[in-house]
Length: 106
Length: 184
Image 1 (cartoon, rainbow over the protein chains, first blue to last red):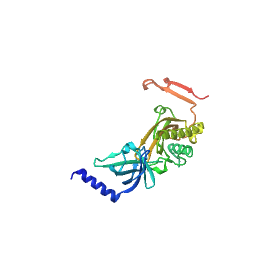
Image 2 (cartoon, chains in turn cyan, brown; image 1 turned 90 degrees about the vertical axis):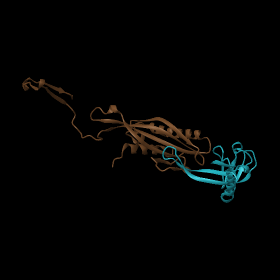
Image 3 (cartoon, each protein chain N blue to C red; image 1 turned 30 degrees about the vertical axis):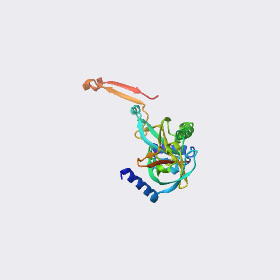
Image 4 (tube, each protein chain N blue to C red; image 1 turned 180 degrees about the horizontal axis):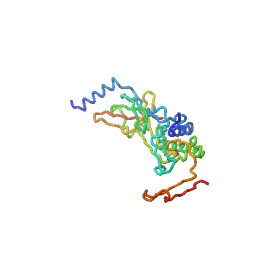
């Protein structure tokens, strides 16, 4: 079994153990439930002095759960009751996983 | 204890901005700790540098013309349209400072010769829960100060008496002598 296949198994296992269900709504499409690993790690945005403490919301999902290409879908994602949109193009890990960097919809 | 003019100017700028922009009362002096994103919009006012006009060194008593750089950093968070938001924020700051300028010699609490807008610089980032940006607006505040700050009081110069001895070998009776009356 190759590396990608191993990664795929690990991703699915991690999704079961660490994941949560989020709502994924493509622009103009139907809302679906997706299992993903959501993280909101703290960070400091270095803007002049003194900068701003903030967080970096991100969601890891299996690409085969999504109805289409997130960069095309322009989805709204609801996790923990907060609505998000993509902050930047989706990052594919080459093993079937997709990291979505998110921004809150204010 | 007397306060340094930088301190006075910084806090006068804060007073001029507090309540006059979208930051409301969140205007701080030379903040070191990062702002929390949830508390934006906020402003940090700093006075990072001061220079003197070299031409003011000459003359006595020595009165230096000093210029303080004042930076006004305006932090904001927004879901979309960050550039427009920063420009609107900057306009509020400039209008608040224009109110100070209109006070003439009383601006920033008095003792200030000039207050000049010198520019702005925008920095934006995607690394947050939303877009975060800051616009740094820079002013120069000029004032004059003695060096030392206070001179002892001296009598006015009224009369100058000079004597000149050629080569230092002339008899005192042969020296040139002048009496120069300065005052009326």
